[in-house]
Image 1 (spheres, helix red, strand yellow):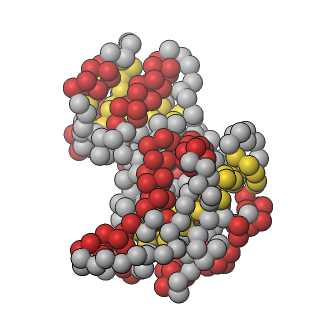
Image 2: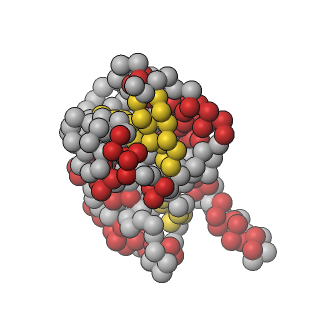
Length: 314
């Protein structure tokens, strides 16, 4: 009997054909949650996309949830007998490219030059940074942080990493330390890039104390989870002239409401959680190929790639 799979979101004809080509599977496409019929939920063994608890309550046969995202912390409520896999690895390069873009933008003070263009102001700005002689720290050494350091190292940066436990140190990383030793490196860094998962242990990690440990001329990036930085503390130190720039693709709260002071905090550059590029189509094919590969493995009786560790949250 075919395995019933519910696939959410809107997809291209080519992607729909990829799903339909899965062996021994009956695929039901549901662009919106309200499109899913209760009978389809009741018989589905696999769910692809963002599953809500009220939907899962009507899925007695559910055995496997596949996410389009790399983040998985919102799904720790799933029972242990249900496999949870994310799209780990599909986002590394594309998010690292976004990080590299915002890094260079901040170092070269491009937002200020764009403002000057609007005012037709011909002024030479000083304190322009170079990535070629910078010390770069990646806090988080998964696929994203590792790809970012690989790219910055290729441009001449001296690279450092922080991870939960020290293992698998890439050859382009000069020093890799555990989280408890991060403060030894932080004051020396020119660029600090966060790609942390949304786990309780990293919530509020970058508070005022940590931010003031950083050089006044340092650039801070965040593409992981917004709550790893204490927003009010960041606003305070930026308003006081500490840090060259903060480039945020994620923030707390999110979406950032109109009128929030972070919007107008000096040298804070905000993008609306788009660095992964999935929703914009930039990284669509890579994510879909990761999902299809995982579904194929499961249908063949093999474990999907990167099953989420419920104890770690990623």
